[in-house]
Length: 200
Image 1 (cartoon, one colour):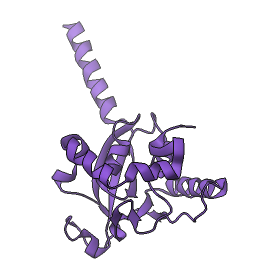
Image 2 (spheres, one colour; image 1 turned 180 degrees about the horizontal axis):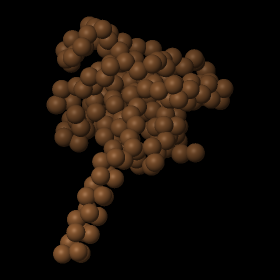
Image 3 (cartoon, helix red, strand yellow; image 1 turned 90 degrees about the vertical axis):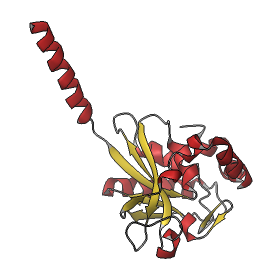
Image 4 (cartoon, one colour; image 1 turned 90 degrees about the horizontal axis):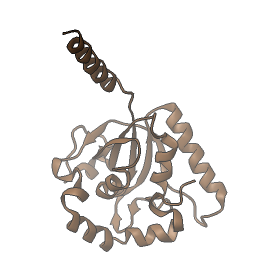
């Protein structure tokens, strides 16, 4: 009986510890949220990635009209700060976008595809600004970086059929990604670092 009680307490304690595990979130606009999701899913410390909308003027936007109200396609990344850092997420973010083209990403055109870092905390904003300055000073780009860094606005999850699109529809996803020229452009912009490779 005593052993059973000890085991029960251990299970309850471990469950409480798990429930209390600290998480943080990041919000990024990177063009098509299908591709943005795929860039972060499965990375160390990343718990969940959700496609959605942010930055617009109306609540509860839907895919067909979100852009009419100024929303961008975004992802919300929930992560464990004991297993990864916001700076590492920023590294992945930058190397999965074209930071030199305004109101577009690859074949997708329009303000809903603009690239933005939505800082959830002042610490995130400072880190994001520092990462942008570092890239600007690196001399690697001949054109200015147009990616915005803004305070986070409400995040609205996208419809269910957009979630985990690359996993649920691998052939359609690969066809879209290839046809959009995303990887070719990432290779042009980032070289060996494209898609978060060549990690520092």
